[in-house]
Structures are given as structure tokens and as C-alpha cells.
Amino acid sequence: MIRRFSQWFIYLAAIIIFLVAVFYIHHQIQAEVNRPSPVKTVTEQHPNVSVISVEACSHEAKVTAYGAASPHFKLSLTAQVAGQVEALAPAFEPGKRIKKGDLLARLEDCDYQAAVAAVQKDLNDARLSLLEEQRKGLQAKVEWASSGVSGEPESELVLREPQLAAAQAAVANAEAALISARKDLRQTRITAPFDALVVERCISPGSYLQAGSEIATLYSTDRVEIAVSLSAEQWAKLPETFLPNSGQWPVELTDVQNGRRWSGRVLRAEQHMNESIRQRSLILAVDSPLDSDPALLPGTFVKATISGRSLDNLWKLPSSALSQKGEIWYVTDNNTLDCFSATLQFSDADAIYISTPDSLSAGDRKVLVHPLTSYLQGMAVNPVEDPDHER
Image (cartoon, rainbow, N blue to C red; front, side, top):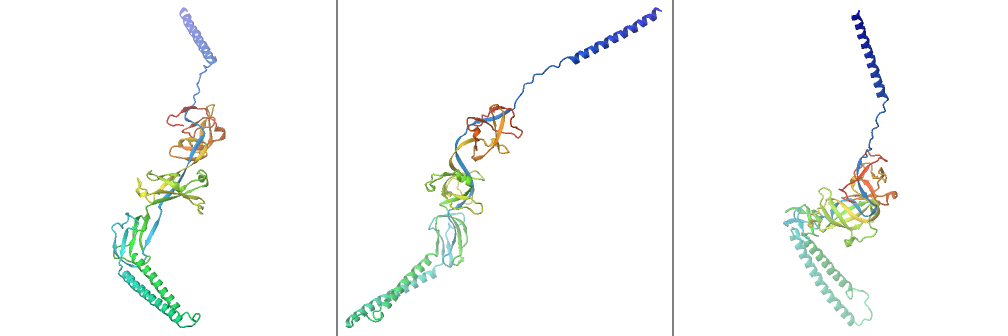
């Protein structure tokens, strides 16, 4: 009996302990549920953006245009008389330079020397005939005066005036023929008409030339000229007046292939519009191009940078500040982002020059050096000055 009572007591105690444990666990769960959640303090962080401080001011415009260098004179040299090529000058080779008056080639001239001698004989005969006619005319006047007949003779033939005029004309004709024959003889010696570069030679010893046959292609070496077409906006950036021949309007030329540079000048401005592109050209020049270091060869395609007039209210920025959409991003006074569509006035090797909106022209502005496509207007940022870019 006592043993059975002890077993029931143990069962009852276990149930009570279990109920107490369940009650305790339920109480703890409720307390945990009702406990307020801790509030985390989060510090808002803004992204850093690289900026430079800029101020609107005046800058000298630079107009950029492109063109090919061409010789001042380009000549297809032709023969003036017919004949066989007897000899060529050693310097008469493609790629070599020649001076004005240098002998390039010599034609066989026997026929031309004979022609000069024949015309010289004709001139001597004509002069002799003129002297005889002058003597006959004087004699006719003496005879008319001694005849006792008053007045003038009925015919000019009496005093031999027509015969004298014919003799004088024959002399003049012979003199002109002699000049022409001597000129033909001189032209058997083919000379350079100006300082030139031999681009192509079209004859060889033994060649037979007709009058008008091509002898060579020559480029003058005094200067090269570059015609660059400018739009109306580019013309508006240039000075209104200039002195082309004074050399006071300099131009910087750069080879687009290898970056070599030359100093040139504005030579003249064309006074007509190109009908195909509706633009007017400015003619640039470089003197003695083959003597410069490095040599500026005809045919070189160059970029011309021309100094223009001063433009006001511009920002000078690194080229990286212009976004892919053609916008300029800047930081407002409350450190948020904003942007505007840029109007590019001109650029150079170091920077771009942007027209500043009137609302931003006063005071310094912090402009982003490298705007990203993910930036949004009104986005809060932390501007950091870029040490690699100067104002």
C-alpha cells in the first residue's frame, strides 16, 4: 500500500514540475515578444565625388579646322618646241630639289640654229633693201624739185613713199622673225621656272618631244598653302579685322598622323562660299616648308588651331567633365547634384570651354570631373577637390 502511494506521489510531482516548466517557458516567451526592439542608429553616408572649382571668365577662342598642305604652284612642265632629248641634268630626278633657272634638259638644236641663221640673213637683206630704197627716195625728191613742176606729184609712187614703207615693214618683219627664232633656240634648253621639287619626270635621253609634250611635274618650294573651311560659328570667333601679310595672325599646325607641329600664318580669306558645303575658306601658309624641322611635305593632312578673339562668361574644364549626354554636372550649395546641357564654344589640347548659364555665372562652382551615368539630379554627395586639375 505504501509502495503504491509512493508511485502516485512521484507521478503527481512530475506532472506539477512539468506544468511549472511549461508555465515558466510560456511566460518567458511572452516577455520576449512584448519586449520593445532596440533602435539602431544608422549614420547616413553620401558618396564622394571628385570636383574642381571653376569661375566664369574670359578666354581667347581657338578655332580648329582641317586641311591638306598643297604647294603654292603646281606645274605640269611642257615642251615649247619639238626635238629629240639630247641630255638630262643630274639633278633632274623625282624627289630632288632644283633652283629657278637650273638646266633640266637639252634638245637637239641644229635645226633651230639654222633657222636663226636663215632669219638673220633675211633681216640683213631687208635692211639692205631699206637702205637702197631710202637712197632712191632721196634721189626721187631731188629730181622732182629740179623738174620745175609746182605742187605735189599726182602719185605717191613718184617720190617712192610706198616702196619705202614696204622696205621698212620687211625689216620689222625680219626682226620679229629673228626674235622668234632665237626664242625657239633658247627653248631647246629646258630650265626650271621657279625653285621647285621634282615630283615626276616624263622624259628620258633620246625621247622625241612635240610642242606641248609633258616633261615633268613640279611643286614650288617657296611655301605650302592649306585651305580650311570654316562654318559661320567659327568665323564669328575670329577677329573682325586682321593683317594677313603682316604675320600677326599666327596658326599652329599639327600632323593628324604623328603629331608633328609647325608654325604658320593666315595668308588670306576667300571671298566666296563653297557651293557644295556652303562654307567659306581661310588660306593658311607655311614658308619654306621643306627647310623647316621637321619638313612639311605637300599632301600632309593637318589640324589647324587658329587664335581667335576673346569670349566672355566661359568655364574652362577638363574634357572628362563633359558627360556622354553632353551635360555638365555640378554640386549645388546644399551639396546635391544638378546638371545642364553644355554649349561647347571651343576646345584645345588641355581643356574644353563651355558657355556658362546666367544663373551660374556668378561666383565659384564645383564641377564634377568624372560624371557617371548613375548620377541623379538632387542626389546628396560629398564633394572632394581633385588635386590633379587646376582651375
